[in-house]
Amino acid sequence: MLKEFKDFALKGNVVDLAIGVIIGAAFGKIVDSMVGDIMMPLIGAIFGGLNFDNYFIALAKTVTATNLADAAKQGAVLGYGKFITVSINFAIIAFVLFMVVRAMNKLKKAEAEAPAAPAAPPAQEVLLTEIRDLLKKK
Picture 1 (cartoon, rainbow, N blue to C red):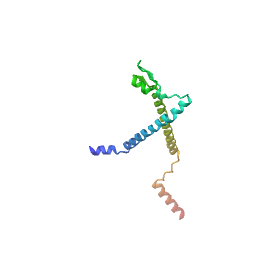
Picture 2: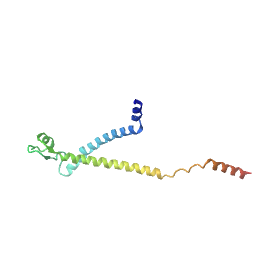
Picture 3: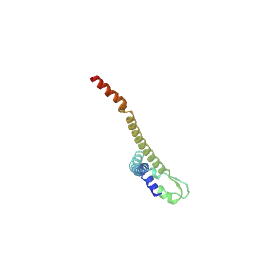
């Protein structure tokens, strides 16, 4: 059983998948930072200082705070601003992955369209060609 598990765990597909998940998680952190630290502040500056992270709807009458962190302490809130930010993150990640897959498909297509080297003639044909050439010399 241990040998079977070792064979399964060390197969190329499992290792490739694990590497893909790790790289995907790191890429997600980069996109989160890009959106949260670069894009959203720029969008906020363009549209008059709005910050999507603090957009919320109070679900309890006890909520009087004007920012999400304090409002969440006071009662139930629906923080749709964070949802907007996460949706933008998703759109960016999906677009980048689309571009990567598209580039890979173009490379595969270019390789498939490359003319293949002509196949070597069968041994019988080579032998007959040699016989023909020897007969021509006589």
